[in-house]
Length: 344
Image (tube, rainbow, N blue to C red):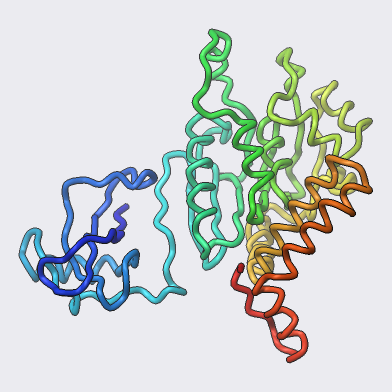
């Protein structure tokens, strides 16, 4: 996959401000720049814009034949509303549809939460957090069978030898739980161990009616180690959570829904589309208010009811009273029109 980005630098072919366009191939997650680069004026549009790659290449080759300077008039910028981030990962398949980013774990045969998956998730979360065009993320799995079957057992030998992993599942899951944008788990297949713990760290969960969940670590002589003993009881209660963890048995989707773990259960073929429909609805909401609501619920559940109301909820309310989104929401309500929230 090839992407193009612009960084600010002077253009020798134009008296106006310009940027260097770098063609990135291979691993673009870290924006590693190869030697291949071309100059193009970004003056009418400002820095940081993406250009249609086919237009860029045609202009580029016609201008100099190999590599060289391209006049700004030969490039047309992509409208802001049509721009999508360029994603390329080893263990994730990522696509962006407007304000919604879908990330599918791609680590067959069971989509285990290996170091590569945790690495790619961390990078994606960091990038999307900084991108105002992204408002909702969906995490799912590739293939029909597994959302994720949990930790990669082939990496356990390193843990037993005392090697400290570069990426800790707890760090990634806390990042998801505390994320300022909504993250939906689209559980299209079984979610076991670290896979269920991943789903529990997401804000909302939609699951295939044919799928099951479980924390079977006890069958390996282990305990759930990425939040399962703490998050699951908060969702389904201590008694049922203990039964699930002490037996290592699996729980069907409909029972998980009845106990409050899931938001919705649908046929497997409809999981992703259902998640996308919900994500697009949420993407039209007020981002700052959504962030403060998620934060207030999370912090409130960690303390007393009194502190939750008088300290956490009150602070969120005072924060939101002075936002542009609140002004827009109130104005839109009075004018009887849909609000256009900007996340400010």
